[in-house]
Image (cartoon, rainbow, N blue to C red; front, side, top):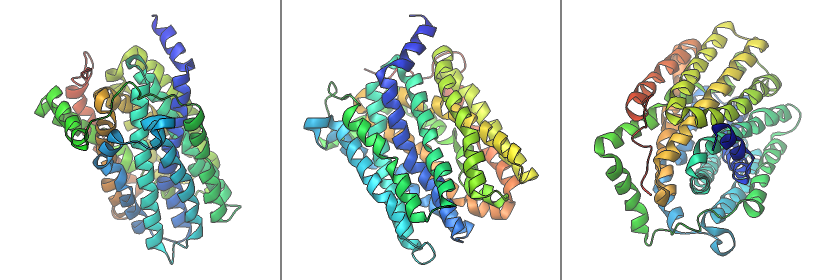
Length: 422
């Protein structure tokens, strides 16, 4: 099949539509935690150190591999929905029910309760991610991994426009309880897609016979396939590739507020300036991955991702400038969208289809460590260094992951992780 025909056909098939809904459902709760929640807390006069520590409530994203074998071994409503779709519907309904509860709390008087609720939302969201990643890996044939994951990432980032744009605009006109309730309603399309649209993808893959097998076999297979040292290099790359980007964007909304932008300006300019770069970048990223391969995409898209970090340093130097804000955020959405598309495709390619949930959860958990543990120090670093030097520091943190590409995804040739066993 001609490459042009392959990506066109891939974009138009039903599996790509399903990837749109999985990406949107996955992105919405995370962006609520990292964009809307900090903006709410900052507007309620919570200091930056406390807001920075709220990154720690995202630990479920880091440790989700601990309970991922349960989702490989057991199911919910499997007779009607199958093992994956049952868990998808269950976690999506939990998220839709829990997000409105933020609006009932007073951060000044109930900051501990806010933290516990945020941790619960993170737990439900991380569990949803486990099953969505496994479902997508089982749904997509090998030839569609690059473009399918690009569509997923694209929808994932577009979901950020709800808590990061629409909700912020509404917050200038409505009470916070209404804002959180409206935000939660955007989980319902994912529920409907899970129930009505998504096919059962795991029917041909038998679940592990025992819980012990579900826990041990994925690790044994991964190390056995690569060898101990190569496996460690892959894990180090997964940890480091988005380290600088994760820290740079950890406090993006408080950064915009500190630069003098209003919540409506952030909603209308900053977030919408990222819409079309995210859409175009996600689609082009998938198409380019078909032609370039995942390895070269990691190099090229990673370089754009690094340059995008420097845009924040420039904005910190210039200050309040709406045109510059739009340009910087547009570049950030383009660079990070491209880099994430290639990165997620690399992770999907690295998994074995027999142990999708646990291996995918392990790799994405490792990738989430910078966003949780490392980014928790972002508020302290900003207060010590200032915004400009902080972003240069984030740029430096992004370099080691790029250097590891020499080992795990060389420009010419296949990476060691290219060919999981059948």
